[in-house]
Structures are given as C-alpha cells and as structure tokens.
Length: 332
Image (tube, rainbow, N blue to C red; front, side):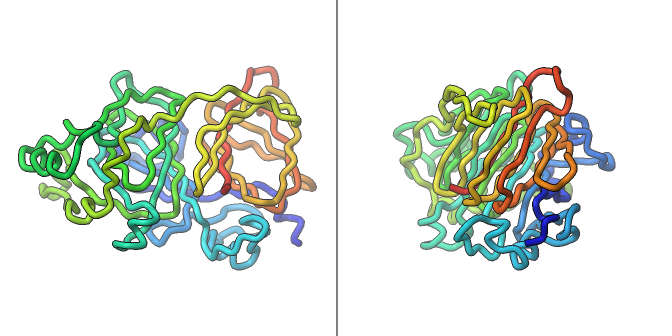
C-alpha cells in the first residue's frame, strides 16, 4: 500500500454551460474562472459526459476509473468491484428555472434503456422566491397530463415547494421535477446523465430554437404514484464519539448523506466499507490524515477520502470562529 494514498483526494471540476445557468459559482465559492455562464460544476464525476481528474497525490492526472483500476477496493471500499466511480456530485446554479424533466429509476432503465438516476439536493442558498417543482399533485394521471400538454400547462400539475438553505429534497428516478430559478444546490446522484424533458417553458436556445423534448420516453419512466412530499424530514443531531455531531439527511440504496457539525478538533475512525465525500457548507475545514501534512478544505470545495484510510482528524480551519457544517456522503 502506497502510504501517500492515505490523503484527501482533490479533483478538478468539470463545468457545464447551459442556458439556465448563472455566475454564483464564481462569486459565492470564489472559483477562479473566466466570466461566463456556469450552470453546473461536476465536482466528483466519472461519467463519459464529464470525468474529473485527480490533482494531488500519487494518482495526480488520473480519472477516477484509472485510479480505481490501480487501487480497487482501497479507494471504493471493502468488497466493492465497480470499474468506475458509482456516484456523481454536482453544484447547480439555476439562474432560470430548469426544464420539467424525469429520469429513469433502476427498474425503468432495465426495461426501457437509459441510465438509472436517483438524486438528492441540498439547498446551499436561495433567493427569497426560489422554489422546487417535484412530483405530480395527488390524483394526476396520464389523461390529465395529455390535457395539460395540449394546453401548455404542465407545470400546473406539479407540486411546488419553497427552497430554503439547509433543506433537502429527495428525487428518486421516476419523479417529475424542475429546479426553480434562484436555487444554488449541491446534488448527489447515481453516476448517470439520462434526462427526459417534458416541458421547457417555451424557452429558445442560443440559436433561437426550442430545445428538444423527450415526452414519449418520459411517459415510459414516470412513476405516477410519487406524490408524497420530496422534502426530507429534519432529524436531530446525534453526538458522535469523535467529538462531532451528525444528522442523517438521506439514506437510500445508492447513497447515504449526513451533515456533520464540527466545533473543535475531532478524531474520526473509518471502517473501510466505503469512500467518503466531504463538502464544507459554511466554513473552511482542516483535515489531517496519518503520515500526511494537514490540508485546508475550503468552503464550497469537495474532496474524496479513500476507503482504506483508517482514521482522520477534522477541525474548523479558524479555531474559535464557531462551528462548521460538513456534508459527508458514502455508499451504503
């Protein structure tokens, strides 16, 4: 085992320019980017449509699949045999409302093709009127959809929820949704990029043409029964032995996400069953791993901790400046 692998892995994000994006990734997270539209930052990704590359340590320059080919379970987790990284973590800046869309779930992808995609959103910041469309209203069925489609009123069939910082939205495959204007989100999802648009607000692209819709494919994968609230319940924080507290945000067969609160140095023991993805929400975090110098993970920056790492220490980068919240993602 290469001892230099016992360290946080930093990756170069892949930026996506879509017509609904904005510039908050530059201003709120101090990204050194040229002026422009940055709708999404793929922070940790190993998909053909965007592969982040490692920028530090012995695997610098490699994609995650290349690192997995070298490291295997040391990176992914004990007993895991994936050939590519199983999750995709994004930042999303919605200056305008996204299209009304749907992704296949595992069953629909197996039946009809495409990639299964369940996702969750953590609201990082939002304008006062920001909202999320998610799920049809109870009782809506295919006949109602066809009437609304003909009338151009599909959004009227959807449930609409205010988006506030700290809220978590659960969006499994099969659930029709649209991210509203003014939302800045962290998204955790399956490693997939299949999206079927149902409605695009009569928007025109930079060439003055409507973007393509995929209504027939969408109708194959919609789960009409997903009419419950997508807003994940707020759970109490639980003190942990290492000196931090945590609260569960979402747990499903594809990913497990917690929010940790760190106010002083804490020691975290790691069981090697999964990698961890860290994202500081509201402050910088100092990370120290065995045999390695400490690293500062800045607010709004993602890093990957390999599964083989036995333990690590976290603390606010500025002692005495209050607590820091940290999103922590792993595979179940």
